Length: 88
Image 1 (cartoon, helix red, strand yellow):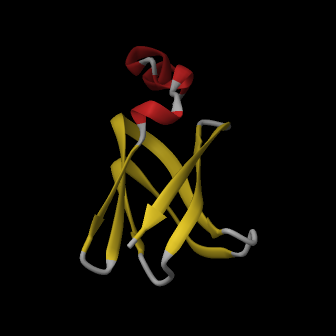
Image 2 (tube, rainbow, N blue to C red):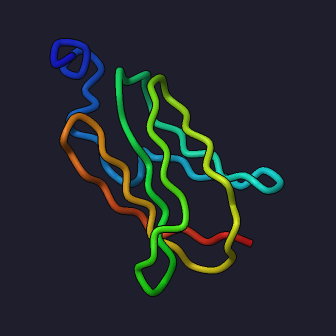
């Protein structure tokens, strides 16, 4: 809900605040605060979507099925943030 977004300041989220870590065969996308509903989409270097999940809270786990440079697109409350990430 909007009030929750305003309280956490997440409406001004930047790519620097989105954490992307690799853990085994998974990629963990973490926001700085819990959010009611958001999504994370991972696309490879040629723009093909390789993983997409939505959820709530501050963490979404994506399968790390392809390697190399990817674009992570996070959609939080209608705000879209893109981040370049590398999967080993």
